[in-house]
Length: 86
Length: 86
Length: 157
Length: 157
Image 1 (spheres, each protein chain N blue to C red):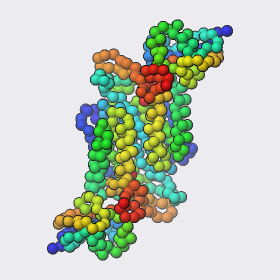
Image 2 (image 1 turned 90 degrees about the horizontal axis):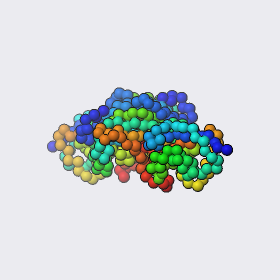
Image 3 (image 1 turned 90 degrees about the vertical axis):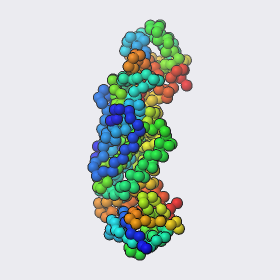
Image 4 (image 1 turned 60 degrees about the vertical axis):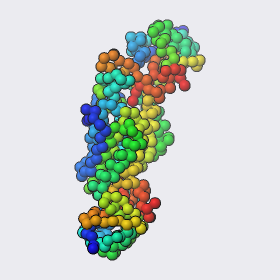
């Protein structure tokens, strides 16, 4: 059973995808790195951010790696390029 | 030859003398401590400030002690109780 | 102004309006405090020799607010006497010399609020999801990266 | 606001008027600076259990200005990138919660102005000839003594 989540894109990632947000169906049991790879499959230009990006899952930062993200239907995930607030 | 100087009193010292300023004639060759003693002679209540006061001679701080103050006619001297600006 | 001395307040505003130092300082002032320390981040007119005409900010607003609240909790843990904390961050276009962020913190004595303001701006730059793009006079624009951000120019440290 | 990027400015105002954070921050902002750090000293409503209704400040004005200039020189020596420095100090009666002093310092990057503001308020309390008297609700008034002042409660250290 795939899960539908809402993906938000900010800053450079919004430029690269041409989107601010989209609904995405993802397979269960993904790690954060696998979730990232799903997004890169949809938007190959995102791959240039690989070494300088983290995700936010339900508004908590998650680096790209082996930890499972345990997505539930309707969860919000955001692509977070390097911060530059202040 | 005595020298006429202008003495300014601030904060507690103005309260104790009842004055904001006065012209004072002082003998030549005074140290800062002797200058203070001259002022205490004029205003005995000033003596309570003895351990917590400095003078300003021509707008430079001078602790009470042995250094000569080298007063010139018309010089400005101020009695400076502990500061509390800010 | 907080005339009634109520409990400590955490004040956050992400806004497209021009920021005001008086608004921030008034919002944190309180009768039992002797000190308000503030930091104002303003738009610089140059970057590596390129003339910056303006900056444009965007934020993941809900998460920015929750990350700011985490910073505020940390401040209250480190400096328990801190009274009110206020962060106003501007979004959208910010012209050169105008403020992009204003932080105001009050405390009974000054050391706590001075240290807390410094901590707050450092933490904000490291963890609050806000981004700025510099727009140059001639050569387009570029997204900036805070050196404080843990995943700037490499994997998460 | 300093729209034209002139040389570094030293701004001092001793005034009986109400102080404004915006006035100070505007006076030090400049196009080449990314940071303005500020400290605002406000009147507290209590001292050792006594209710303070207001404070009253007096200054040896000409010497206060010259001592502030000495502090500014020292700041420029310690933090050469500091741009503008502004100190507004209020004199006469200052009601509770209103500002008695506002310091604003600008610099290209924030560390310098943050450190310089902290230095400036510490030095001001130690060396600038200004005095305040607290006026209490019931029990008269008393002249305050900054713990930073070298001749507080004893001989000059």
